[in-house]
Image: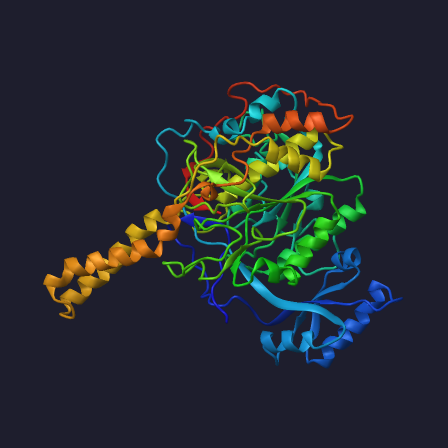
Length: 547
């Protein structure tokens, strides 16, 4: 059954103009993995795949060469103008040369806009950096230009607080169909959503430059990979797979490239269990990259107050984000050694109502009212802004990505597994609050149904004297609907490990990396050097967006 899906980024207040969207996947398309016959090279097998697609009335729209070479299987996107996706998948799975086939799912980025200007824009600006104890590690290192972090998102604007840290030679726009991996002149920097630029700033806005903000790393090389187009907030999974293929190719061509982590603040709600997902092409593409064991994969947990890794127990009351039985991906993936799923906490160490939570969420990080760089060309905002506040697990994830890069700058020979272990074991377990999902939804749902009830009373459908009894009934039904979440015990924690603590992770990593040594970038972490507002030239706007 086709229906809406949901990506993990959310800006609240004003909705962007987006096309109607009611399908889970792109009709007439399917992702497939073909077997490579024994004794045949992967490249030669590609010819057979094209013939096989033709035999079922389809054509190969795209082949993911690097993922194919890594796994020894052919990853492709097939397309047909005469068959539905269901027919394509059915025909593909009947073939002996096909391992699996799945829909080309949609992932969606939701609406966002500016809210009120802050009265005191310089107050407590870098609470997230302080909360994870980044300044303690800055006394040793503020990052390294030899360490890379990848932002798979809406693009990264060439912001004055980012340009010195952007690895332009590796920038990639998946919206450009090309077999050439050296795509230096395409518009990866055209961030018309602003989300990717905000994420990039938390990871690596230039520090100690007397403008704007500083990231977890003052020095780092950011690889921007754009998977969303200019016109709207939608993407199909093939663009994400194209990004994974590009990253895998980059790592294989550059064996000495130190890529600390990939940041994925995006995703989809899909009616597929984690067990079923392991035979889905979407998962298998991530698995192929994970098998290289060259980088961490950091993903946002999501913003629906849902327990990650378990099926949603009811339809989203707003009707727009998820359905009963859905799981959130890639956060619900299992079996990926280098995956880290990140939930959000607020500055008062409480759980924001939006954060997804549970045993599948590995770690928590600051995700409420985070100030970072922004794209002034983003559409939908009331004012062009170079810096904005934002909230969401999309803001939490880059704190972890930035921490991974900072640790690798001190211990460049550390493996992804060592860095992941240090991050999780070093987390502050005392800051890992219980979550009470949807407590606000009960109130909102009652208010919504009461409004309908009042309309019915005005129309004479319901007697006025029955109003109080009907409201009591609506309230009981709403409370019963969410009763499951009111009985939470230790399983209702935001994450398994608690709040990210860079200092503790650094100390643990130092004990476990043989021959590891710290190094200083030559910059000192002084008060005011970490975060300095750029006065006069640019506007700082407070935004509520969740990712």
